[in-house]
Image 1 (cartoon, one colour):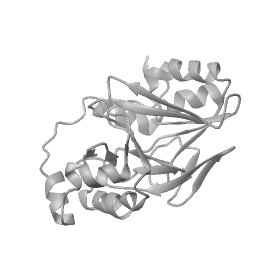
Image 2: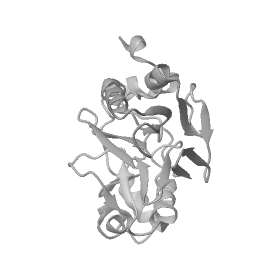
Image 3: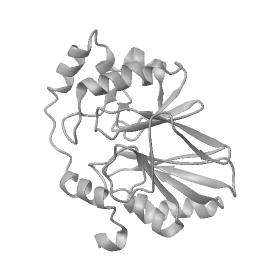
Image 4: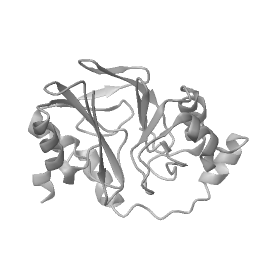
Length: 231
């Protein structure tokens, strides 16, 4: 299997390129528009055909590369059914499956960071978007976020996965590339709570500044801008 984890230093975003082998179909999760050339080079070098591109949610800290990649490769743009994006080709719901050749992703609806946050389980690993981060969790104070919903998504869905399931988030700010469900259950400081109310209190008192790109990124991602429209 081909599995590439690519990083955008500006927004600390992880993008994932996945395929069963060279010369086969590929999918990309959470692309950043400024890195389109990097993705196209990777695809060309590995002789891959990009057929599906997925966003875990409407991002507030960067403009997605979803639409630019679709313009180049005519690939399907996929998000969860709760997404307010105006340009999605396929809207998936909880327990749906996304398939390319020998790769299969199981869709898990994990609201809380936003109301359109989805995670994607692929055999031994789960792509958690901004819902479950490494030793953290995504903020819940905008885009219809809800700390109680996030608690349910994490404790009653993600943490029910096998302990050795690898966790690959959409962001990390401390140089960590992955973790496991077991490690997060034991070591994530925000998950060492005894009740949903305790978790909600933590999340409601983070007092974080808005992402610098939020006023630009959210409208751009809803409308589906491409590079020529940005320049």
